[in-house]
Length: 264
Image 1 (cartoon, rainbow, N blue to C red):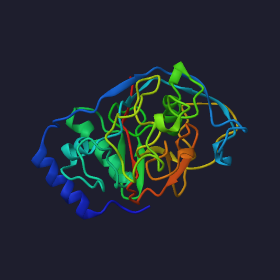
Image 2: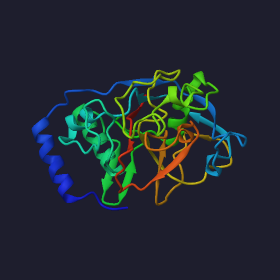
Image 3: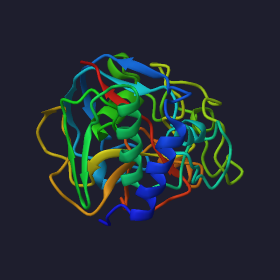
């Protein structure tokens, strides 16, 4: 993994002094904790081997963004907009995984919260007890996408109809769209399937065979987890259980993120 460029940090510091307090605050939804079956069943259409084995996972309550982070919300804090498809209410994309963490930390500071991440070059440590903004874990993401403790049996987030669930290559017209235009899932979360893929905290790796509580993924790896499918790829990638891997130092015009926070 690459270090965060010095020029980016300099620009970030200048933007911080210019923008001061945030003008827009992302809306978060409380996700009541519970236990669910994580992963796809062996007979699920389109299933990949890395989506199993299925096992019971328990998740503590947390908060998750109602929408994918928008370009307006990012520019409000960082002072720049790297999005390939420009628009205030379009989901933010074309940033690195590291830059997403920098955003989380700075928004936390502006709101008087404890930043979740200690970023030292290639090393990133997550303070699990911090009350600041962060990326969701892969398990939190899948739990929320599937309806949380109001668990549904839908293939996609809130629907069995791919076009109704989200934006994918078959209906997007080759670009992202304003957040919240498709139907929400049972928890009131929008675009969990499609629009842009969403970064998670975890390294990409094999699932554990046994049940877990609040898993954070494997201890190391070259890639981080991406979830949710996107406007660039087909509808089969919108499935709740689908797992992608992203290079943390790379930029993708179809990958963004949504904010999470601890509930206590």
